[in-house]
Image (tube, rainbow, N blue to C red; front, side, top):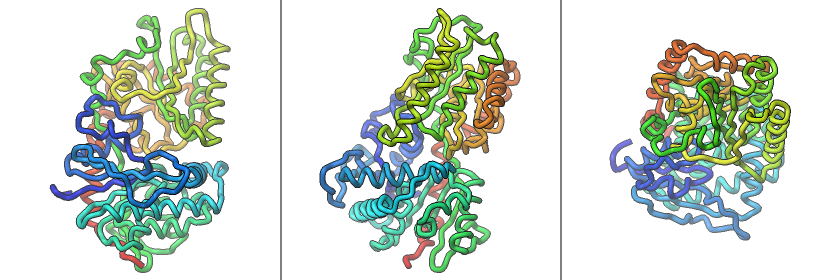
Length: 474
């Protein structure tokens, strides 16, 4: 991007005002990478961020957003009627697209009425966006909630650049074809000038789906063409701002042992897991692996504590209510089975923590278990690596089904469906010699400091500028 050119970001939800104001330098952004990844770019160039306010009203609101000035960044918000929020967000986005894109076909709910609401809300977003756009704006749309926004914006007459980034996986073509509207969705993507995904595998899956559903062609530069439509497709792996998780930012934060009022001696070990409470994160599998490790290695009993931090997520969605109940039941069963007078093996914290506090927790842990069943990237893995000290680093146990595993190859890579294998890998991680931990940490740290949030956004926006208006209106 060029100085003076405005960046307009669109996502399902806008961040809280406290997360984007320039005064907020205390690392208080919530768990999740979008805000921390885009905020520096928006502050540098100035911009507007449009999304749902999160509020539900009795009646449908107008298309014009409410705009608030927050220094160099403006927040533009929309309110939805309760039925709109329920059908678009809970119904289609979270019960249809989310499980489909994460390759959980058995959880996909197909309802034509929720799809109609999804399309209606995408049109509402486009109308709101069109009302505030200026010539020369760079529009960057984020995630699966807004697959059709580019198409709707073109229909309204916008001829400027529009980019789209998918923060979750793109599944295999045969899974994506479960969606009755798969062809319409893929055609909608081709109205964007640039479509980005996290990994080469997701890009191959997207190409396969396009070939299967549309039968277009791709050239040597990665531009996919179908009739009058064309869009550049590329890989852009999101990172973090490593400085947020460095030791100097932890000053004043309570340690993990202080937070939990633990009285540990040097022989005790700490394992940490940090996730949104979501069935894609594999928390029950991880708990069973920890249980299996205690079964098979009784010498660890009384000497290792597993701390699971689960940030509340989508608390109105039935599948998430069931997941919470399952996790809590497993924690109770394992603690009931193994607890001793002065030792409880699992500490379960159903709450969120700010980044500077999490940084201290990561630093204190001997092992981090980042073992999703499927994840677009997973920035917790990179946050843990960045928070490690140079003298006594911890070990990252990482799922092969996370996008992060494609670059963090010196983590201990595991199959989260293999409970026995994950248990043994975690045991090896706890016993890993210092020399090996140092070598692995050095390699992982290099990757985390190379592929940062800033480099991700700059790379995407540079390519968006080069590929502007490759997607003409039908």
